[in-house]
Amino acid sequence: MTLLVIFVDVIFVLTNTHFDISEYECGNNFFASTGTITSPNYPGDYTNMRRCYYLIRVPNAQQIKFTITDFETELAKDYFEYGEGYSVNVNQASGQLHGVVTPGSPEAEFIIDGDQAWIYFSTDRNNVARGWTLTYEAGKSK
Ligand SMILES: [Ca+2]
Image 1: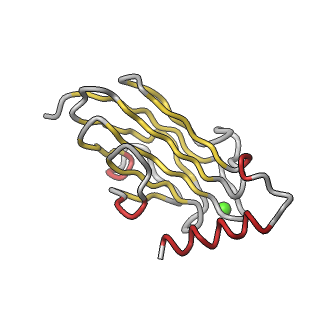
Image 2: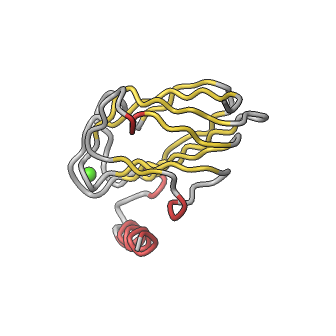
């Protein structure tokens, strides 16, 4: 079902010629043992139709801990997903967040085992919010 949704979104982008797909892709690679990651334009609103890929790779880390310090997206429409490994695979996501996440709540902190993690942020065709910011810290497993 997720694949179908992505496929339909791709077709939507490709058939709307005034869209340049490169304007809608975003994200970055992170190699440092600690860092801060934010949604596009944060703390300003993100924009519609974004596909953001964030890859975190910290050689020799045993786990990477993520702490969300602010989070607001359109409920059930603009998704933040995360998982283990070297590339985004939403079918094997470890978790998915949308709507409001309260800092300090259980869902605001998550740990990915291993030295590689990904985050994927996708937004639909309307209704934006300020997005999210998080910090991560790689380390040894406890
Ligand atoms: Ca939206």
